[in-house]
Image (cartoon, rainbow, N blue to C red; front, side, top):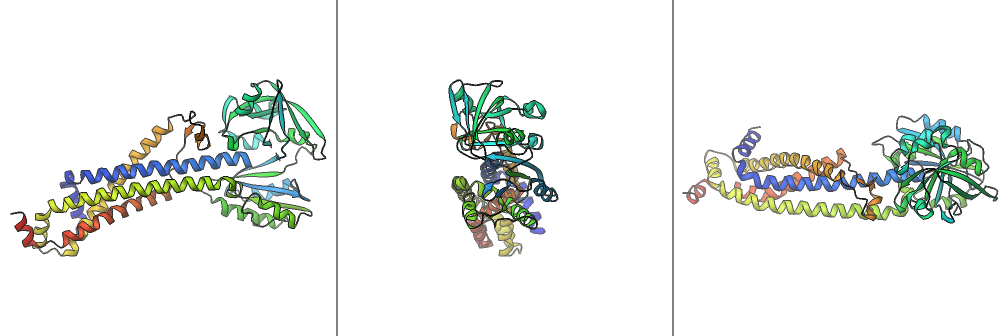
Length: 430
């Protein structure tokens, strides 16, 4: 406690000497905060877009004799709703993944990568962050959404249609028959090409067009509460469902379902897809993004360490007489080294707190900017705005990294300070 009190007292009395090293640590921690906050915010944004596109953070998909379809949607929902301590939303969906879903308007046609039948009442909160350029999600709620459709901005641009226009939808039924419908554009949303060329219609409307019962579904979209481990929860869901349904083993990637179906497609089965399995095709992009982020963080930490090392060498030299006086009064070498290390630790924590406040201010300023003009930014931004995430675990890790770096840089000068003899200190400063 005496060493800690002396360290804090020295920091206050000699604050002018420490201002440069404190500024270096604060700026370094601010940069780390900005980079890590923006990186994890971008990752969360990608996952939110993927959840809308694929059907939830965890997707329960049904197969009946190898074809998409839930054998008992109500029974699956009943199991999932019994786990609502970790689940936020459970909603039915019908996913049309055949490559022939096309929209026609004004002599132009656009083929949709995915056509999704959605229970808009159940998923209203989850779909509320769709970036609408025109129209709104409210137009699809209730009976007002009958025969309505939400299309992407890219599809609307190709066809030249607007909200309120009638577009013709072409698809094939489960029996292979052609079917068409005239739908009213209720909303036009902006989405990056990776999750683009998808159209949303009411669940009952798509089931009707496919000649299925109104309450049929191919998927159950499961949205998890914040902070829940997606992979662990997906396995818990799979095990809970396996008590009542034939369920495939864990699937590491979306394409793994083909091998599972080849091995056993007779009768009804369920497959549980995690977010990582759904994102397997772009996981390499996300991994590379995080790798670059951590590389930049390491570079910044090394720069801070060099600055701290050089500054501490100067501080120890300027305090040679003080060190000699403490040694002459009986302070042991270990206590002298501990004093400087404690000063460095206290400085690192205080400066990191200042850096955190500065980093949050920068992130908030970036949040106010629009990145719509940057084409590739659409994947990582929410309605053109940068999102950031301050995860407690990441903040503590950043603090541990910064304090460790400061202590490592201050260790050498602290050891040197402990070796200074009282007589040499007095003679050098005479």
